[in-house]
Length: 575
Image 1: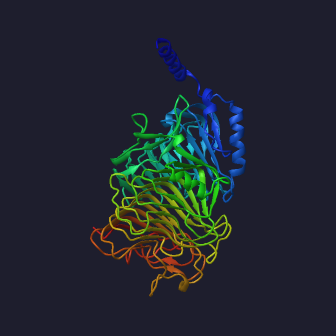
Image 2: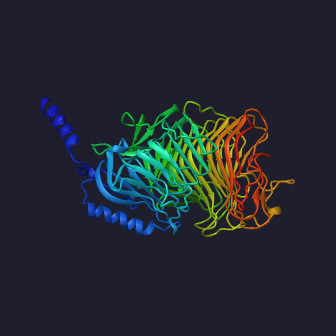
């Protein structure tokens, strides 16, 4: 017994002192599209892998390649450019466990510093010491920036070129954050020394160091506390080489980062409890069989062409994608559905419309769901949707929410305005988001270019913190763009007439009509009821054709390009 105890103590000491690379043999098989970096690896070898991936992904806007870089705890000196469909992950309990000195950056993907198509890339869980003192993150939609520690300044543009972002959460910047020319931005539960910059719609939720100034000039929307949220689950590896997924706890009335006192509060699920799926090998049938056995699901990077939906039925199931894992239904069905049960988490997945029209891509709870999930809601994190662009896509609804109390923590729901298979009768999509459930809360709602209501909200007691929308560019004529009667177009954000309670903060809605003589009568349509309240709204014309005639109902007046008129409404109904 004494020798066995001595051996155990010696083994524990060895585990505590040993470099992480000793345990590389225990690394799970994440497939060929996940590169795992260890601080003991030669710097040149790591840099070569990063450069090779970026050579493919730098301008690969609609390509099939997918990548994830996972950095194990330790210190690195590298230049990490983040290209399309690339996720950079620090696998430590806190961002400070993984430290990169040098350069980690997202650059404008178009000429002239234009970052308006810098989409589909992500970074989380890393401390960065930029060699220049400033980290550049010039991005637009679908680019999550989570659990980061910037040991310096951060800029959200490239040399003040155009940019249309973006999202930041659970992140700390020691210096200044400059949004510069960003059209809009949401920061949730983040901290910095200072913030500069404003354009059309900047929203701050649960940020202790709120910037100075009040709507409408500068256009800052500030909410002191985040009412209810769960941070996105994340991959981690401990010093003994054990892999797990950390599932953060629910937070109520929170502000600032979750990792002030070390590890984010929550619980860890051993990676052995996950079915690790691989594109080209796994089908919906193999994935559903694993889920039916009680497994959680990790989707490694790639495109999963599905003949039937992935069905998530177990309470507290975690479904998590790496490297913009993409689900594409091929036979006119959903890509994923969930049961109406507690605690399901869906995170880090791109849903892509297939060639045969689907009724929806992701359905949360079946229609007419009734269960109450107040204590343990379903949550969605960094779920993105695309119809067209990489090829013809067809859907009726992209995201349908039927389960009460659902939380959405960052989404971009996009009917493509450029790329392959794009046209009014080619890539068809009626609605981006349909909410039928009560008590749904959404942070960071980006919905663009659909052919009906971008958002249709039928449930009561809904809340939206930040909304960005471009209405469709391509209605060929007014008679093809009407919600009925004498209505011009389909409102971007529609709250159904039967709804009695709804509230939204920070909404920006933009027009770029490519055909003349097409109008949208109202950017936002809501019932006139005392508990339906909207705060801080703006409409902007980005083209010379047509107009948005009013901001909300018959209030606000028209937005036009020449001369530039950008109506703003502070509160509706007016206080």
